[in-house]
Image 1: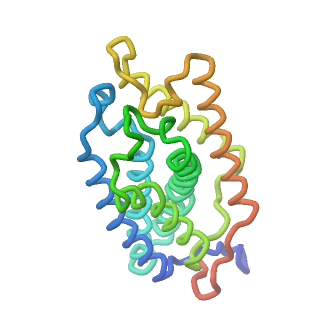
Image 2: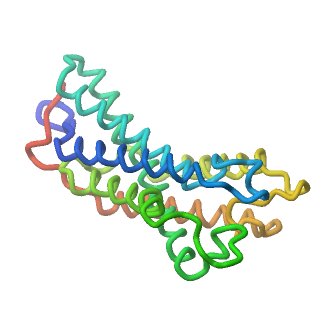
Length: 240
């Protein structure tokens, strides 16, 4: 809160605009290339929309678009209510969702990709990843780098407004939604497999895996809230 009951709104910095612009270019390029890869027969039925990586990149692109829009809304609109809504949606809803997703993706993916590829990729008998390294990095690492940099290094970031309790419900809902999404797409009785071999485990182990990953995502949100960035003084404006 500012003086006389005003609420401080962090105006997006030019650095934030550049980071989100670069993220859109890199993420779109990576997503377009990885979704062209030919899937093995056991995955082809559910197509590329089953992969958490691709879903996370889409979430990142939505966040990028919202933050670019918010940059101009904060500078061009005379409506304080529109500015507040735009800032809340871009910085307190879509950004934390994308950031948490893109934190979990490389945390799970890269250790398995480097040391236990058979747990992260289906049907790779020669042990070689079918994903070219530039594409791999553009979808499994750089989205996190751009989001993290926007939040912590752009001068625009600050503590998210969603509470830890609200975040727990949101993360649990998203985890359950992905679980049900895979159940909807995949029918093991036809020979179809889950996108990641470690998810081919029987119940209740599969549910335990989803609960563990969702819990880790929530813990990352708490970590980001415990050590929030400090916005630069130049990025802060006061709105009535």
